Length: 167
Image 1 (cartoon, helix red, strand yellow):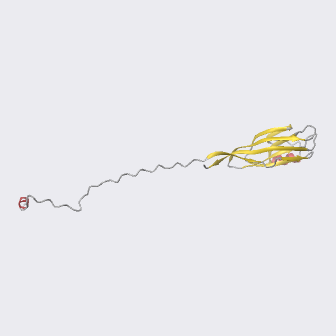
Image 2 (cartoon, helix red, strand yellow; image 1 turned 90 degrees about the vertical axis):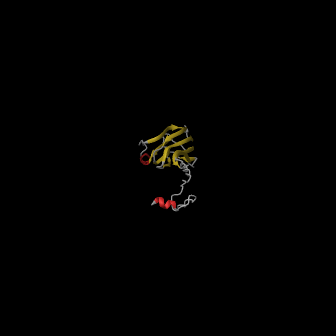
Image 3 (tube, helix red, strand yellow; image 1 turned 180 degrees about the vertical axis):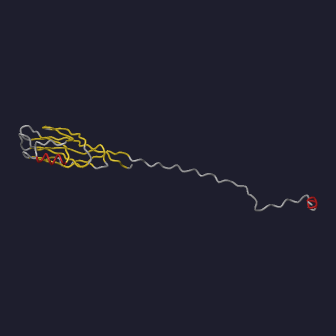
């Protein structure tokens, strides 16, 4: 049968195009994957804050204190600076850094020895570089020495610490 059908066709006839058949597929060019911009990581930033009081006067048998607050997100907190006392025969004063319990008990009883992070002893001047715990502590000037007189204490103190900061 096939030879009979082919006989009826002309030899110069062009084949009919096939529609709906497979087309030649060209894949799209791949788009480059964007390189993600790395997020900067947080880092420890050194910060400070000054204690704004620069000088105080103390009468005999008087104590003075200033609160020092170290927040939970700080690390390596330190009280840094210097003080100088004037007045009386020896120009001496005693400075300590203690916690609230130490301050309360020392105020009530001069012989009580508080837990301290810094203690100057009886001095005319001193440089402080004392570590501070997290929470509340106190810088205390004590003029309740055996031989006491009016004193003026000048100081330049600051708290230095590191805090996690976003760049």
